[in-house]
Image 1: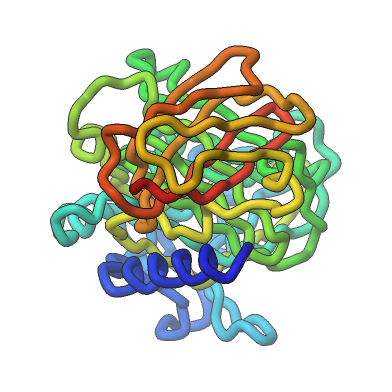
Image 2: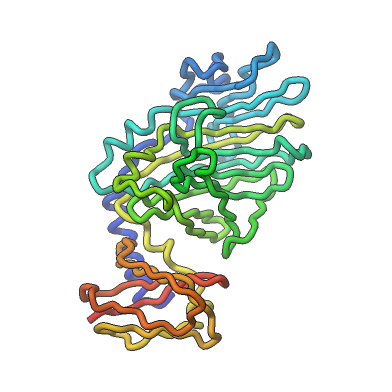
Length: 358
């Protein structure tokens, strides 16, 4: 990233910092080591207002599956253990009524950031029941009756790590889409028994979601609620709960969570729009500065599928889709004078180019 673009991104991040509004934060250090709750029916909240849920009646169910523990170099954390045979069922931790916090956000802060430190736990050799899921859900019901807004998923027999987003489809059973979280949306595998920070930004204004794994230098963008035409998607699809859910049943595995935070932002941070400079150098834009038409070409004849124009606050201004075009004339006549970032999406990856509109 050149110095001028770095400065622009820094200014945008500072602007975002000033408008950021922390709605929920929990590092568990103020809770007591031991059982989170003794009620495994999800009826009565336990420590920190966390509900503990075991969704299959069993005399062997135990509060030991849900604990506050001390973790080396982390302080206190919350743990979620899956039952092993002969006990079968799903376990879940849930923080409810998040919508009440989101409804009190500053007006215009319609980007919801979710972040958590996640411990991947032990490998599970089961081929059917093999998931650990965490993120924000659409209601306060038990796991079987709630559907994700945005979730992370660990496939715990392989270590594959992916996401699930709500696409806004009216049929609730076809309203979710899986997203690969590797670079250029390739498969991503996490090591077992490892802590990793996981972040996503749900941009309700532009119907995009950005996934970030800082330790792996990974940023992945995907459509979000794109099949719904509601003019106020945050009202219709507001998150109501945080949930961590496990259906591992053939191995007593333990996953851990720490530093859970929900923040409301005005715009997506500009650093999420940056990408690999080497790939960006394969594209030329001219004239630059421009007045009405910008020519975008690729020296390698790389086909461009989509162009998004962002201002330096990370707000999307314009978006165009193309089919099999590597030489594009982009009309920018309607843009106000200023500096913009052009996000060029191709099947080989994404490039960011800076453009100045006179």
